[in-house]
Image (cartoon, rainbow over all chains, first blue to last red; front, top):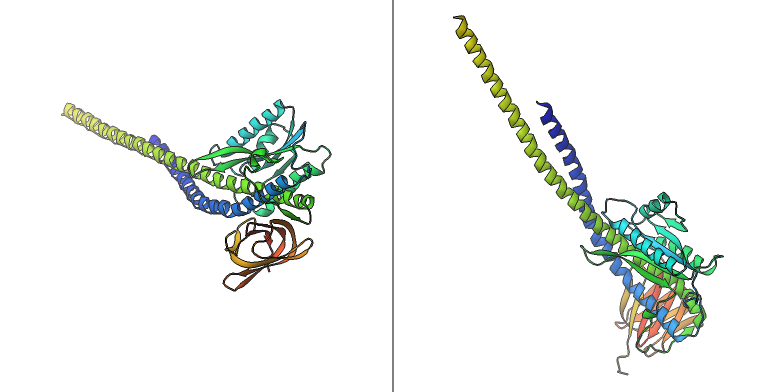
Length: 296
Length: 88
């Protein structure tokens, strides 16, 4: 076998092996999207109810709470960025991190120092590589977040809000919204202080509080933050799977293309080899014939 | 108000909707003690402590949930119990 042909065959084998891997990852992600989506859906009743409750307290009580009232001159903000632990998901992580950069730059323009809280190894590596300050980071659960993970993250953020020496005045969360199988967009949501747009337009019932409004609010807000963080994590996980499925699908398609063109090249190389052999034999026979004709 | 004197109850945990349906009575343990909620109860927001939330459903059966804390909110005959259910 000719050297050229051998090279083509070797490359085809390697591309085929890669294709098997990307195909498997595509299928795995495709099956996980559905599950992740269901988890987003089943977590939304809780998130909705708790938002409703927070709204009710914030509207019907004159309680001044650090977590609900916007500071006159905010100085620090906590920014939580949710990215993936693993790559192979196209621009998924990068898009979220870039959105985070935009948010941090916007905060800086308003004179606010931003503390970065990161979820996902990709975000962590990005920040580490650039020697940026990291206020907190969590890894290892980006593709299948549990409520206890959200609780852990929220605890650190609430602490930054209530007890830390340099208290944060705002809390933004950057995650990837799962719009559909094909569209996922990084979005920024302000969790604290409660945005005015979340105040209701209509009339809410006059609530009784048990035991009283301040205590209810104190107990409610951490749960509210947890619910928001958990929902963001679940949406990001669904988006991550969708992004990975798409990236792996195009990788598989590219491998198909590559195999096709390599097959063509290998065929041409094989044919060229055969043609050369034939012309060598013909040339040799000719030479033999003319040599023997000359001797007679 | 109409005579629809039933409560619409939702019991939700962070991860899923645990139970939902129509009920005639809900009782729960809040920070200040046990409360029972009947239809047309005044709007209420309370903190739940560890204890049992029991729901008397309209078909006569009763459902008990062991909660490890959470909230109860009542408005316009809609009762929402938010919290984490304890594995019993």
